[in-house]
Length: 105
Image (cartoon, rainbow, N blue to C red):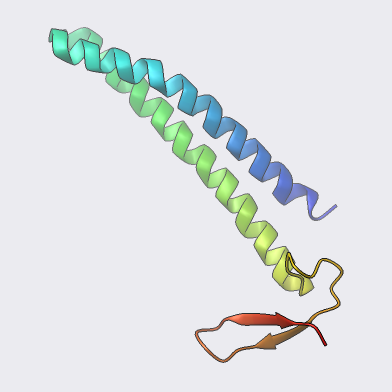
C-alpha cells in the first residue's frame, strides 16, 4: 500500500504533463501568429493562456518528480534496489560522496 501512493503520483503527474503539454501547443502557435500580425488583444490573450498552461505543465512535472522522490526514499528505507527486489542484499556505505552500494552476501 505504501508503494501505491508514489506510483499514483508519478502516473497522475505524467498524465497531467501530457495533457497540459498538448494543450499548450495550439495556444503557442496562436501566440506566434498573433505576434506576427501585431494584434495586441490577441497577443495578450494568448500570452496569458500560454503562461497559465505552462505553469500547470511545470506543476504537473513537480507532482511526478515528488512521486519519484517518495518512491526512492521508500526504497532506501527498505534497503532495496531495483536489482535486489527481495531485499536479500546488504546495505553498505562506500565512503565516497555518501553513495550507498548494495552487495549480495
